[in-house]
Image 1 (tube, rainbow, N blue to C red):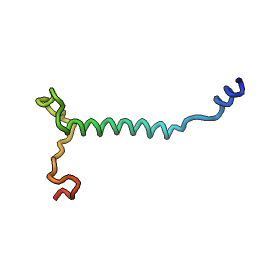
Image 2: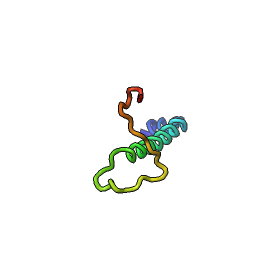
Image 3: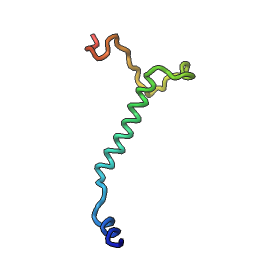
Image 4: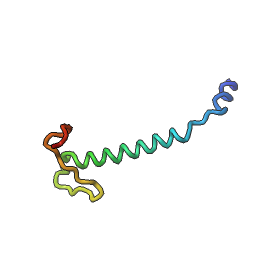
Length: 69
């Protein structure tokens, strides 16, 4: 048993780069998701609420994904 505990404690350390990628990715996903949520149809009870100033206004297109023109 002590051999397994020694093997588990020696040398392996999760790389900092991987941790930073996960943290930055999570923050980006929350930020982008929040902007998308605010620009989508408002949930029940939020129809009359004002859009926060930091959320950009996104114009709707007639044919999204088809070149837009």
